[in-house]
Amino acid sequence: MSNISIIGLGNVARALGARALAAGNAVEIIGRDSAKAKELAAALGGATVGTVGTAPAGDVVVLAVPYAGAAAVVREYGDALRGKIIVDVTNPVASDLQGFVVPDDSSGAQEIAKAAPDDAHVVKAFNTVFSHVLAAGPAEDRPLDVFIAGDDAQAKARVSEFVENLGLRPWDTGALFMARALENVGLLELGLMNHSVKHTNFSLGISLLG
Image 1 (cartoon, rainbow, N blue to C red):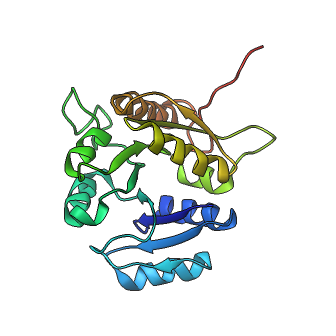
Image 2: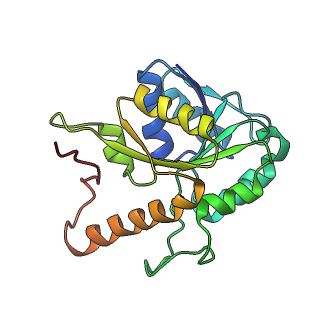
Image 3: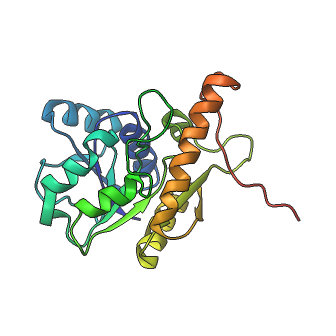
């Protein structure tokens, strides 16, 4: 079981919060709009409400805000995130879906890591799973795969345990630079949604042969 803090009040925050609570974890909801944070916590049932800018209660902090403001949020918390595992779920995709809003040699997760305290550990995860698919969980005995990337082995192991606790299947893809590949998967999914699948009721995962 984990103590999880979720910064953000959107669909991903709601989906992760619900699954985490259902699995017996302690969940703290944090958002700039305190009224909406209390509303989400109440809707989830059993979640507590944290205060923006103060140290999150959880040892795992899920950054469930749009990428455009993610690094700024991390800088705002500053030393309050010391020693925390920061889970980046964002996709820094440009509005025209033609690329990314980060340098070509970087990724959203790497840019967030630059803003974090030195002893915080950023782990990329959940960015390849649409929020409503995450909320629904595995279907028809097919596992729902969550790809992760990070530089700290213990932090990745901790996030993998959390993923498994949610009834999902973690796949370690390597160091944090692999977040570039995972963010490209996020863009790939948007391309599939727009050009072939025509909806978001799907997920990409691994099928082991033999």
